[in-house]
Every structure is written in C-alpha cells, then in structure tokens.
Length: 176
Image (cartoon, rainbow, N blue to C red; front, top):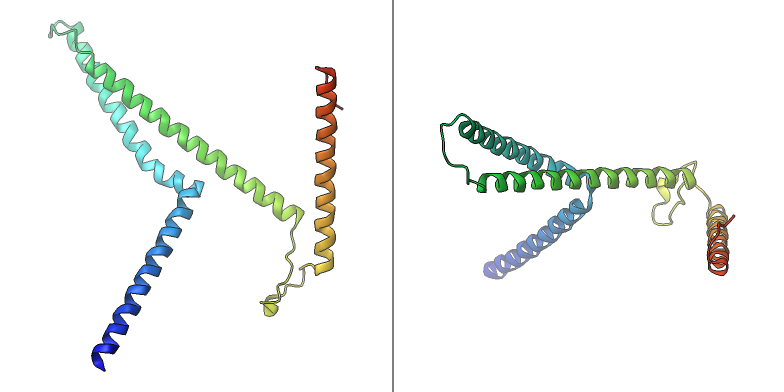
C-alpha cells in the first residue's frame, strides 16, 4: 500500500508542478504585454547601451586625438567608427522601444479612465451575491446603458458611412 500511496503522491506532485509551470508561463506572457513591466525591463538595457556608447565614444575621441597630435600614424581604423555607429543605433532603438511602451501605457490608462467614466458601476453577479455594492447597476439599468452605447455606435457608424459616400461621390471635399 505504501508504494501505491507514494506513486499517487508523485503523480500529484508532478501535476502540481505542471500547473505551476503553466501559471508561471501565463504570468510571464501577461507581463510581456504589460507596457510598464516591459519599460522596467528595458531601463537596465538602456543604461548598459548608454554606457557602451560613451565608452566607444571616449575610445574614438582618444584615438582621434592621438592621430591629431601626431602620436599615431594609423588613420585607416574605420572599425571603431562603425562600432560607434552600431552602438548609437542600438541606443536609439532602445529609446524608441521605451517611448512606445510609455505611449502604450498612457493609452491603456486613458482607456481605463474612459471605461470607468462611461460605465462606472458594475452589475452584481449571481455567483457572488455577498459582494453586491450599493452603487452597482441593476440588470435592467445595465441593459439600457448598453442599448444606448449600441445606439451611439450605430449613429457614429452611419455618420462615417455617409461621409465616405459623400467623399467617394465628389472625389474631393469635406464631410460635415
């Protein structure tokens, strides 16, 4: 009996390990899409890249100063200049990624604020009756809010269609 119990324990432990690995993978995937987390991950890379740019720039500066002062006769060392260009390009690429992360985080925040502004109250669910909030919407209120949002979306859609027909019909001009 003890071998069977230990085998069951091993199987259960293996299943738990697989579940934990799947949860960690899902968490890491969610963090990859989180612009703030990605920003935090890119900052150390940006620091290293800036340090690399400065190091290569100082080496190039020293090398060029030595050539100008006549201490060295080698003028054909273009590898150092190419390395500087490459490191500077890497630095700018990281800056661009950071800018995109910040823009995406700002857009997510704006959408979240708009979402809470236009639908601030939640509908209580039947599965959690103990968490009903006093400011939550009833189901009929929720339905009327959704119907008004659908109506507004249809009005916008129709206005865009009308505008595109006017533009296509005239070939040029503005829509009002």
